[in-house]
Amino acid sequence: MPAEHIAWPVGILGVVQTPFTYDHLHRTGKREAARRLFDRLTPVLAFTNQEPGVSIRCFRWLLVRKGIFATTHCRLPGPDFDDWQARIAAELVATVLSIESDLTTIELRASL
Image (cartoon, helix red, strand yellow):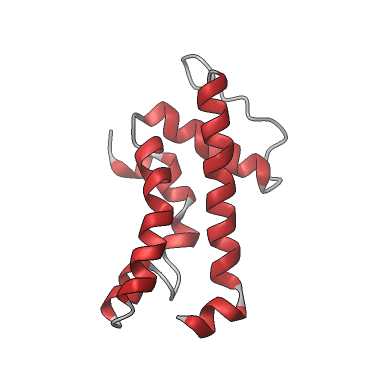
């Protein structure tokens, strides 16, 4: 499946395509800040890149938290998350929202 069909990485583009992205930080010599951002994103990427269904479901959970959808139900064929997957997905969505929030704060911008 082409990468543009994997939903979660597209869902975190707000995190990774800002002036304070990993690449920008790295290229401007702010390698410690880049490493901290990468360390925060790694669990998200590891979980969501298991297979496209996990990616799409996680992105749906993110959109529910942002108020775009009312439920986490997907029409995607296959089972919904089990209890363990649901707990991990909720934690990772919270991580993405935290990163997005951090990247918009003046304090973080000043520290980078």
